[in-house]
Image (cartoon, rainbow, N blue to C red; front, top):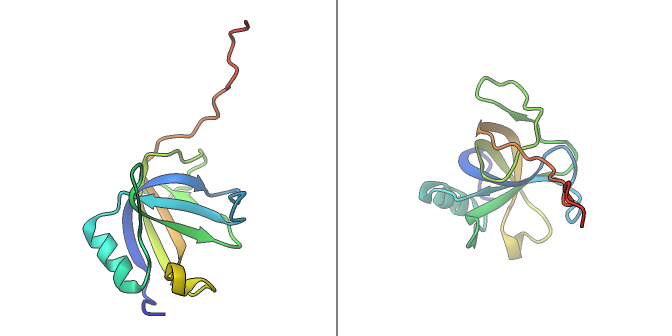
Length: 132
């Protein structure tokens, strides 16, 4: 493992599974998207493979295996609302080795998530009031 010091990453937040594990990975996780050039460089220098997708820009997925990820506001107060795609924040991330490290680089853990611009996720009723 190359990097042991946590990094502070500013990002757009997407697919935030903060209080319930993601069904596919079984982990609490959040995608940190549209990363700056300096964040990409710092992550790559640490040994993390940064991915790129059209709708997310350059991004990584920060995960927590055992513990929910607590999102807080700028004053440090816990955010009770669900964090929706497009929210912005600052994540303190750490790094860990995993069995696929040679293929995917280091794993990225998350120590803290400060939401600076919250877009609240609301479950939309897919049926609505209109009956045909």
